[in-house]
Amino acid sequence: MSWELDNDRPIYLQLMDRIRQDIIASLYRPGEKLPSVRELALIASVNPNTMQKALSELEREGLVYSQRTSGRFITEDEKMLKQLKDELAFEQIRKFFEQMKQLGFQEEETLSLIQKTLKREA
Amino acid sequence: MKPILECRELSKKYNNISYALNSLNLTLERGQIVGLLGPNGSGKTTLIKLINGLLIPTGGEVLIDGMAPGVKTKKIVSYLPERTYLDESMKVKDIISYFADFYDDFVTERAYQMLRDLEIRAEVRLRTLSKGTKEKLQLILVMSRDASLYVLDEPIGGVDPAARDYILRTILTNYNEDAAILLSTHLIHDIENILDRVVFIRQGQLALNATVDEIRMEQGKSIDSLFREVFRC
Image (tube, rainbow over all chains, first blue to last red; front, side, top):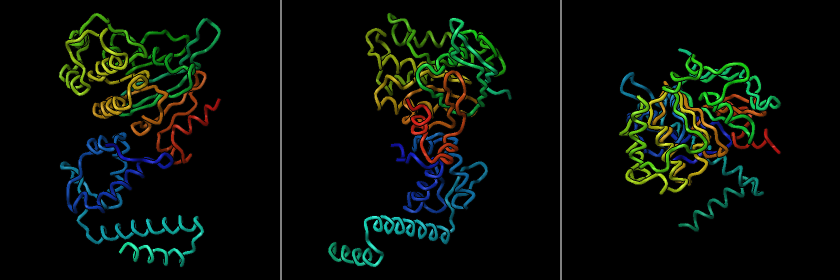
């Protein structure tokens, strides 16, 4: 299965997002080896050079590191992983509030609606 | 290392009046998958035929690994023409051994693997195959070579979406950094994610030459949308 990608953003940025998400979702564990660029490119159905760029950028951010001959690994820095997880959560929440705003709900209203929904589900 | 493809002021005039290609300058480096895009009649197939020595330039030159098209370049260029040229009375397996005899870089095992993947039987004669299956077979032959330059004229036009995915995967699997792939297509949306770079040509001239992500970064839109905009009728 190829990865779902948008039309309007650079592909390598979307690949970075997807890999970050996969790390947060524990698809890859801290310290685990990532598949090779070629394998990942095939899985995602994207150009290998674009995948290479995405991984180099993640490496620059410190989320993955490479060992000269044996490939790329996920960072074992738990603090960094926790921080990334929080950032992604904030981002989702910000997006959600933005969408609610477009529907005409102020933040207070949205908050109380969230509580209402949670109560109903429980 | 010399660029795998270089066009210098390349021109082709048909019947002495209209330019199909007009002073085209284009250089392709190895390790790239390049989309050759343009509306009908923009000169894509003319360029491809010039690269393969099927047409002689009216002006300028085209060089493959520094050489003019000829016997030596045909050894390193694997070409998928827009139309099939295979002998209909031959069996699939005979075509494969024919190609293996003809090209030093042909990998028979890879061809049979792809036949199995696409469920094409080696024992049957070509004339019994559907149009789409014939196109798949032709692509198998072309991708089974370890060439330095693959030139594919509309490789996915006539096949169903599932086979299209397989073909794109085949292109990705066979990709290596010493080779370049130049492919023309109208199905931009389907191939956009596997391309490094796109080359737009319009009326025989270069209209754009940029990487896919450069275009997305600068224009905030896909190659497909950009194409529709640039070539709006």
